[in-house]
Length: 468
Ligand SMILES: Cc1cc2nc3c(=O)[nH]c(=O)nc-3n(C[C@H](O)[C@H](O)[C@H](O)COP(=O)(O)OP(=O)(O)OC[C@H]3O[C@@H](n4cnc5c(N)ncnc54)[C@H](O)[C@@H]3O)c2cc1C
Image (cartoon, rainbow, N blue to C red; front, side, top):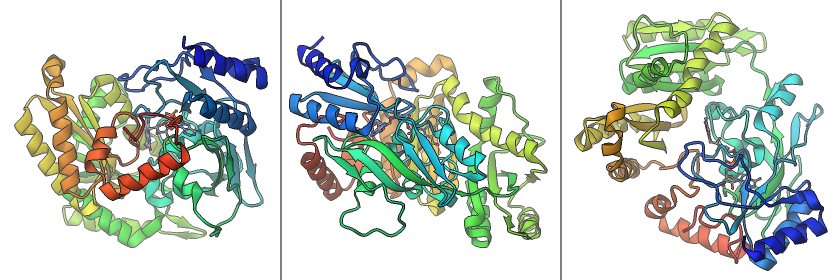
C-alpha cells in the first residue's frame, strides 16, 4: 500500500478517531452494471461536516485523491476508484434527516438514503417526489451530485428543482453553506446550482434543504396501448395541453420491455388482450381540493379511442391496480439487467422529434446488425429515453461485443444531430468522458475546466470523472 496513503489515513485516525479510516476497500462501492471494479484499498467515513473539512484539507496538502461514494447506484462509474492510489470517501455515517411541519422542508445530511427521506416525509402526510428505482440504496448526496431525475420530473423537476439549500466542503477544506430556507436569494453567485450535478468533482456535498409537496389525493393511473411513438406523443400533447402540471408521469414502454419481463420471470398483470407495440403509462393528479377532473379526462380519452390514436385504454380503479400498473414500468430496468445489455443509452431528445429519432435509430442499427433487439422505454413526457440495445439471442453476444463502439458512436451522433443530450439523467462519470468532450459545446467545456482548475487545482476530487 502506498506510504503516502497510509500516512494520510493514520493522520486522520489520530486527529479524528480510529474509526474514521479503514485499511480495506469499501465492499459496497460497486458498479451496478458490473463494468468497473473499485480499486481503492482505503475507505474514510466521516461523521460530521467538520470532519469532512479536515479530511479534504489534509488530502489537499498531501495530494491524496478522494472518490466520494454515496449509495453506489450511479450508472456511469463516478463512485468507483479506478486505481489503488485513490481513497473512497463514504458519507454513510452522515444520515440524519429532520422534517419541519412548519415550513414543509426537509433538512437531510448527504448520507441519508432517499427512501428514508421519502418515508419520513410521507409519515407527515406530504411527499418528497424524487422517484427512482434505486431509492432504497441511493443517498441524497449522490442524488444531488448527479442531479437525479426519475419518474416525476415532468411535474416536480430534477432534484435541482427540489433543493433550496446546500452545504458542501471544497477541496481546500472550506465549508460552503447556503442552508437557508429561502425561495429568493440573489446574494452573489449561485454556488448551490454549480455544485448540483458536479458529480463530486468540485466539492463533497454534506447536507441539503429539500422541498416537499402535498400528497396527491387518489391520482389516476392509466395504461394506453398505442401503435407507435407518434401516437404516444400526440396523446401527450393533448393531455399536457389540458392538464398542465396535473400530469405527474408520462412513460412509454416498447413491447420488448414487456416481453423481457416474461422472459426473466417477473410476474406482472399486463391488462391488454395482447402485448401492444408500445404502452403508455400516465399518472394524473385529478383532484384539486373538492374539484374532480375525472369527467374531463374521460372525455379526452374517449376522443383518443374514437380517433383510433389508441387501441385500448385501462384506468386504475383502486390502489392495488395502480401499484400493478407501475410495477410493469418499474421492473423493466431489472429485467434489462438480468438479460444484460450490449449498450445502454440515457438520452434526451426534444419531445416532438422523438418518433423520428426512434425510427432513424432503429433503421440505422439494423444496417449495423440484424442480430440486435432494442428495448426503448422512458420518461417520454420530459424527452428522456432509455434506448437500450441487446443481442437478439445470447449466442450472438460475443460477436456483437465487437460492434459495441460502432453502435454507441452511431447513437450518439444521431442524438447530436437531433440536438439532444447524450446524458439525460445519469451524468458523465468515468464512462462518458470522451463523449462529453466530443459532443458538448467547446465554450462550455472551457468554462467547466476553468472552474474545476480554480476550485480544485490539485485535482484531488474524483480525478478522471467528467474531465479527462
Ligand atoms: C436500478 C436503477 C435505476 C436508476 N434509475 C434512475 C433514474 O430513474 N433517474 C436517475 O437520475 N438515476 C437513476 N439511476 C442512477 C442512480 O441511482 C442515481 O444517479 C443516483 O442519484 C446516484 O446516487 P448514489 O447515492 O447511489 O450515488 P453514487 O453512485 O454513490 O455516486 C454517484 C456520483 O456522485 C458522487 N457523489 C456521491 N455522493 C456524493 C456527495 N455526498 N458529494 C459529492 N459527490 C458525491 C460520486 O462521486 C459519483 O460521481 C438508477 C440506478 C439504478 C441502479
